[in-house]
Length: 500
Image (cartoon, rainbow, N blue to C red; front, side, top):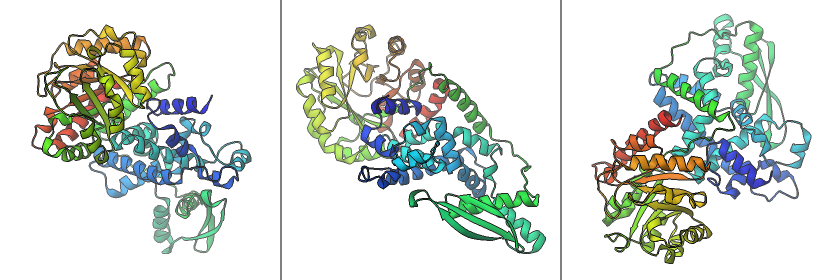
């Protein structure tokens, strides 16, 4: 299997479409910093900085989940649970379920010196992977995928079945003070291994008696390990703590997780796409579109939807490449351009130069659709085709395999603020069937645009949409940011309800 195939396989395991993370960025994340020890590869980009970033987002996503799902937990309780999940042992278990060792690039000496890659190296690359995913997507996407991967470890910790959740140093200290009125003493005896993967060895003594030696990737972890062994020797290891019943929301989360894992374990099952919110700046304040972009950023929406109208294909005139180019430096979000215009092929290069990530043209506006789709891809953009409400979905049968996205209009194009056309739901279902018949679930996203609000959103998602464009229902509210956050929460709930 070549590198491209390996990367595609890994991204699919993580729940991402092929190409969701740029190839060079993914390769850097998978390249362990030990490569600097090899003369031939010492200048090769490696994962050290990405590890720093990934560690931050792992902690943030798990902390946010604990804070939200355990409203009565103390800081100490949440810290103990997080400390278990954010650990080499937990990360390596998750990574080994992904078979991450198959994709890791490291020094020849490390690769040849052992049959199995060290736990610390596997965990290190696992952290780097999330740094790369964040840079290629956004925080909501990264957090969602992280939680999907660490759910088994999180469940063990919350149910009290993970031995490592206990704070052994604190327990040993309480024992020592109660029995001897003394404190345990820890001493680091030595370290072993290269700087990038050093192991620490610590002894613990109590009342002058050596109780054992612990090992860990850091001095703190080695002390915890030493304290755990000491408690076992003293016969004071207590794993019979009273378990507090978990909140209903947490139990539901793990039940859904079990379903998702059973689906993921079946190689013949195609996992559903993630749901994306794409606010349309057509409804934002045109006197200060930079503010609209910032609101989209603060509202954690995934894409920026750009409605380009030429006054010919539709009876309205909006903006073009120059304005998009001016907006591009102010947002790292996916720029999703919807070209409601005649002869779009004459302007595609300008939209690419302006910074568009995705360009969607109308089926009805292209005499030579296959050529236009090829042109979009040659310019380095994702290609989409849009259908007006009266255009049959079956018209895409011969071109669907070349597309990255299909945009179904649920209003007649040309103006914002229109009412949702109910028949669009049947059209979405028809497109879902067509996509499935060609086994394109992991390639082609289904986007729906027009009249979507809190009431119509569940119907659109249940029908099978992956991306929802929302304009007036976001920007024509007193607080667009809060409205977008609310829509994202609704999408997260719907994703669990309909996609698991």
